[in-house]
Image 1 (cartoon, rainbow, N blue to C red):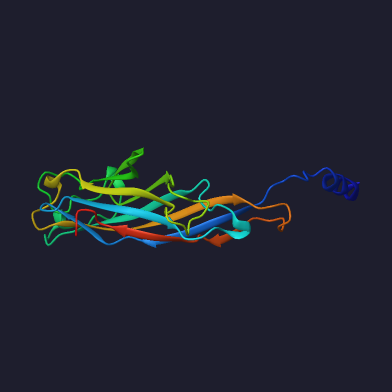
Image 2 (image 1 turned 135 degrees about the vertical axis):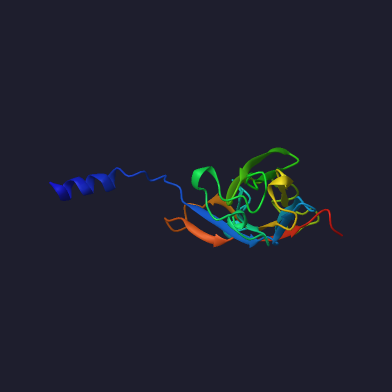
Length: 208
């Protein structure tokens, strides 16, 4: 009975089930430091396609970028008020030496001029994911019009008074990229993960 049931399942399985190529790549961003005198940082994240995938597939379909980051509070203050931002207990970490008891939250915004940015207020870590909108000649990425997508990452200290004058926030972050494309019926019946044929560039637009 069990053998017969298994054979029936195989016989009725979907012959048109589709398999996909999964293209992935990632890049570390530059270390950011926010302080009373420099409460903002902005980065432009650009993914540029350099080649088509296997079977000459477009590697930009359903593309997404996910930014991950950690925030660490630095201060020269001593005593209970100078503890670092290391946890989320009781609604937040210690105040890093600020006299008003506020926590040094960072507003993280991730998006592009073509779409509304997604944003969160982060104390110790953050993660945001946004779709990639490619422009240019993505069917022939090695031609004159480059196939690329851009996103902006903005880091803003919400209240400068939440840090002592000699304090700062260190932010380490990275971006993961992923897209998918259907395989032809002639290819092997399984999903396949590959390195995306993209180059990733991260620049600070406010700097020369």
